Length: 153
Image (cartoon, rainbow, N blue to C red):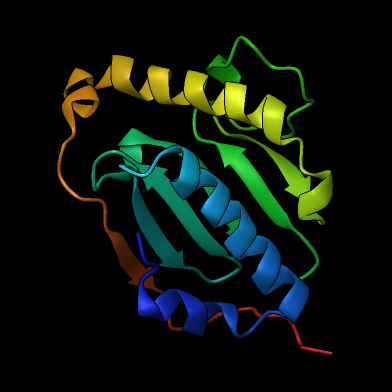
């Protein structure tokens, strides 16, 4: 799936390394789960991208949050994962993440296992997702008027 043209526009506020890291993580997810939709929020404090087999955030299995110095790779129901070999951070009821600063150091093998479990959790909550046969889409869900964005160096 091609990214929504606005995604690259939203990423321009970040330095080249963060832009590249974001796209590498995006390609990692869409390469493993090509049927997933990409839901994009250009929020106040971060650019957030969720991946879901529907067009609804409640069905999302993972996400990317873009910040000035790193990108978070998160699981929307991370507290429910049982095969966690990586220490996930977060204090909320469901979401857990790891901070990523370098794609080469990103634990692809372990995250892949966790990603498939996260997809299974999402499909168990909404069984109609496992039957998804429609083409995936990259769509902007909202754009905040006010934003905190990094100053490029």
